[in-house]
Length: 324
Image (cartoon, rainbow, N blue to C red; front, side, top):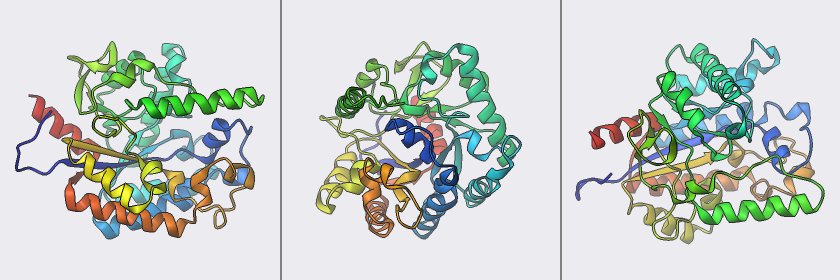
């Protein structure tokens, strides 16, 4: 999909609200302490919404249903209230599965449907409105997921991450953990997704990493032109200012910049009481939240000066019009 020469490229900011338990699983650390269950939603999420409000940016937050399901877990009321506040402030909520199983693409079709539908029910109950978009745990989308999303009336998926370098680095870390006898809970995505189009496209429902005539638009996670380096929150927040600005400028060569972050990007190890066992393995947690807020503010300053901002839902509507 292209844009007129005079038009600014589009950008959407999206945030995956994975709880800290997901990172304990990634690093093979076993169950996370119960007291950390709400840390991302009750502490990091408000930091995002406050900064985005100052910048006048509406984002898309992908929510794990179990984290805000107060019918199943009344103790999650604080997390549900934080997500409800984000929605009330004008941000879009997206489906990130009910329990964030990294192997969702490998589960039976009935289990895939249950994960997506249960999260959808929770979020509809919270917002009072249909949910338009989905992001698979670990970026690993499958035909079974696309079938459920289409049946539920979703308009877009935003799971495909065509970044060979990221895939190679992830494979190396997983191999190292396995060698240490501490296997990661993460899984590798379907390698065919590494060759997926980097721009928005109508997805083939039988192979969502390629173009087709399916009912859903795919909004891929951002990678740079040529090298397909990951242009995501972790990369940009940890990069020196000169490099992050060049990264963003490179993305202006695409019609659409899907800038993805994670809730943990604005977690603070000290203020949020995150144990050293996770901090030692998660480089971004070794930066103070003040440092990361300043970096994200600089990123948003650059993005708002170069791009037309929208939610992913709005970007999907634009992509559908462009393809019509």
